[in-house]
Amino acid sequence: MTGSDLMTGRDSGGRRNGRDPLVVRAIVALYPRQWRKRYGEEFAVLLAQLIASSRPFHRVRLLANAAGGAADARLNLSGGRYVIDRTSRSLGIVACAVVIFAIAGAGFQKMTEYAPFQSAAHQHPLVGASFDIVRGAAVAAGIAVLISAVPLLWSIIWQAVAGRRADLLSLLILPPVAVGAWVGIVKLIANNARHSTANVAELTAAAVLGAVVAGFCAWAAATLLRRAELGERVLRSQLFPMIALTACMLVVTAADLSWGLAVRAADRPLFNSGDDGLLATPLSPSWAGGLVVLAATTAITAWATVAMARQRASGVPEPQA
Amino acid sequence: MWAVTDDLGRWADPSMLVLSSLADGPKHGYAITQDVAAQVGVQMGPGTLYGAIARLEERGFIEALPPEQRRRPYRLTADGAQELAHAAAKMRDVAELGLSRLARARTATA
Image 1 (cartoon, one colour):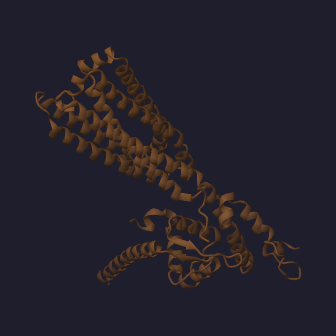
Image 2: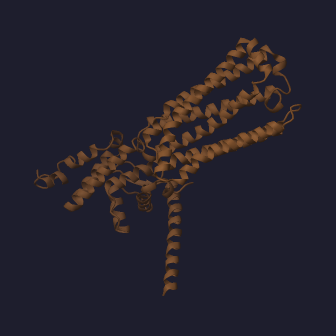
Image 3: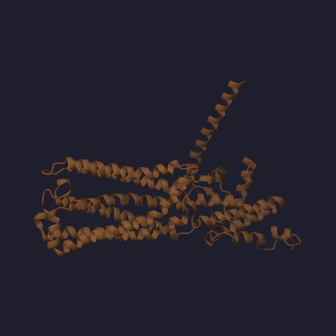
């Protein structure tokens, strides 16, 4: 067999060998296994056909192009850019959930810093233990967020500075500014609120503004992750911090439920008080509202984590029958 | 709904070529390369073609049909047709803008 025969897959008599030419098999072998399973057969036929119908000089270009395709498939293993985009969206959703979760957690912290709650925590072991678990799990959740965010931020900041990407820089700066503005507005509301009556309107305004800020942060995070062209490996490494984050959020939510039930059982007058909740609102709806927010954001984070795990586990899609 | 050109980066052009080629009916890889070469004069390499096919299939813009021997034809999905129409309209607007301004500039300098 000559060099030309190796390229065309024909023997010296010009007949088909019945197998793909060696060079075609060698090129197909460069692609990832999952990709070969899905596209290998038809790609080999196409490559063999194109080689057979092209002139020697063009064959070199064809082979270079086919080998370049293998590099692309390996860089975007298991689904290409789409997986990256979907992972970015999952992380954006989680960013939104985490911001809302943190706001609800801060509300719980603020609500329980007053003397009646400190006293209840000291007098009733279950109230105290639930409170400590909420705080401990919240700190652990913060650490998980840091573990997740630091490599992403490092990569994005490097790209923004090295590439002079004003769009990335603005997307990095604006969310903290928005959160800072929200905190300032809530402080203003709290400072000007009357503590003798329930401030339902102020609480609603703070919650709505918080939701808007969280939505903006989620959009900024998803856009940032998409535009920064992060490698799939960096994004895939987010799965384990997200699992840890979900577990911590679950613990916080369960402990918050336990705390409320323990206060209700141990100190009914405090639980039924009309102005010990957030911004002098009744305690029980304040606690229940916060619990619903914590549970909802935990569920969203868990769902996004499961989606990311599925994306990570899935390969190139199987063809329809 | 975002356009292919916004979402696929450097793969936008090959993807548009594949979608356009499939707009008049299902084709397998070799037929797509021949159609694109004949209609547009662009020689798509096999790596480029299958990079675009994999991305379009993942997004649900094209779908594979049952294989014919070792070749597998692809066809445009409804989403793919909508995406092609959207992206092609956008490209037409850009082309019309560029051509009209060039014509105006030539008239002004003549």
